[in-house]
Amino acid sequence: MFEYEMQQSRHAELVEEAAQARLARQARQAAKSAGARRGDKKQMGAVRSLRSHFTRAA
Image (cartoon, rainbow, N blue to C red):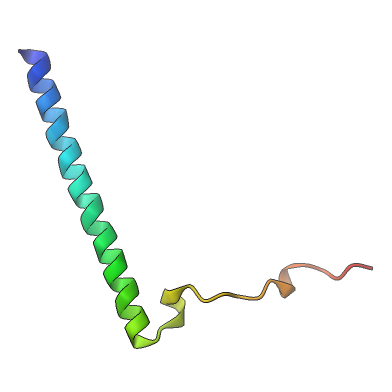
């Protein structure tokens, strides 16, 4: 009986952890969506040029 109770407890913990992860993901998506509506390029993940990261070949 003890093993069954431990399994039930672990299952409940995993369900709660999944729910928290789902809420966090939804909050990130909502923030990203709100940034896109405001026209905030940083939230959209604007592409930067890589030219300054490499030196010219001789």
